[in-house]
Length: 479
Image 1 (cartoon, helix red, strand yellow):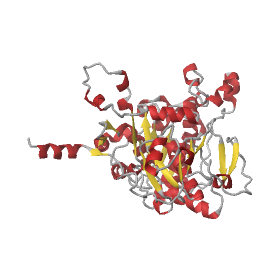
Image 2 (cartoon, rainbow, N blue to C red; image 1 turned 60 degrees about the vertical axis):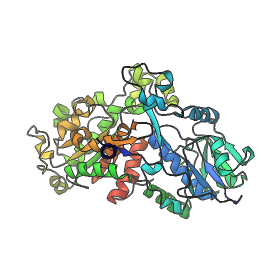
Image 3 (tube, rainbow, N blue to C red; image 1 turned 120 degrees about the horizontal axis):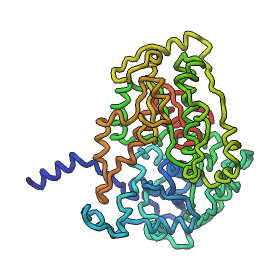
Image 4 (cartoon, helix red, strand yellow; image 1 turned 60 degrees about the horizontal axis):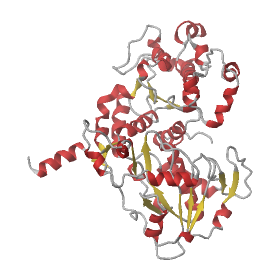
């Protein structure tokens, strides 16, 4: 076999991640008038996406060039730490000089420094989003090295040119674009007006964390427009993700022909309240897409309702709570669960014609067999995006599958996901499919005529506010 043939086969089976040149969208000027802004990425993909959104806003407000870090993908996700600790840990998290980790055979002992080699990677935001339009409003330089030395070497600066804006708590400050704003601090500790940042003379402002929805407020009319533009452009544009999702959406009947759901139950407080979240969504579905009576729910379809309204108080699950919420467990289980207790209920549309139009048989051929009664609900196709393991057999989702025969999850379409296996960071031999599956899940669920998400999930918020809105043009939810 010739070398050329080998390369062709390689190209057919591998879709490499393309890394842009640092100055692909903007080359810094020699003028000392150009100023810069950057931050430290942390946590999961969607927390980093919120950091990016805030950084883009700040760059516009301050007329500073954004030095944009790559997005870190890993398991477990890299946590928030105080500035100095986070900076140190990010520098230590490197693959420089570890190329030999790729060559270790399965039957060979793995050196300590190689143990996590395949468990994380960093890729450019351009893999997910097209930043061309945004670059007309924000000057962007890509940085794949988070060291201060990279900034100094590439921008020809000194230590004295860099202002380190160190944070000592996850929500140290909220930034206000209007001095007259009376918006409360909410979970943030300190108010920071934009004119305070404008007064910083150093060429670079280097933040720690910029995570936090509405950490950077956009309350003036022109800033609201910028925020809308940013959110519009931060909708997945990767052609492989869109192609895979499109195939599955078509199998569901096409855009706007199903109900999309995102159920997050796999970690933190979401795991503690998983059954409550599912029950809330279930009753929305029952109310709008069935004519089930209260008696039918109590006797058959929702006969474990009272148990489903309780938090999971197993010791191991409790440890997954976010730290500030752990204090609540000093209360007894009865007190903790009282706020979630709710009797089983039905509340169907008052217009009988509306409900009747939603009932009937399905046009899809791959639904599950009905039980006679729920055949009337097969007209409603449901797609569940979830981190729940083995969702079809998981007790948490049982009553949705039992009530709605045409309910689908991503694992029902395994053959359509094969293209994801080709995407690879070639330099590291790291496959990205495990990180991309939730994103395909999100794209699919966003294209239903209606979307239900998990309360307090940044992923659900992203699907509803950006993917669902901009891809289906359904009215944007109020903020």
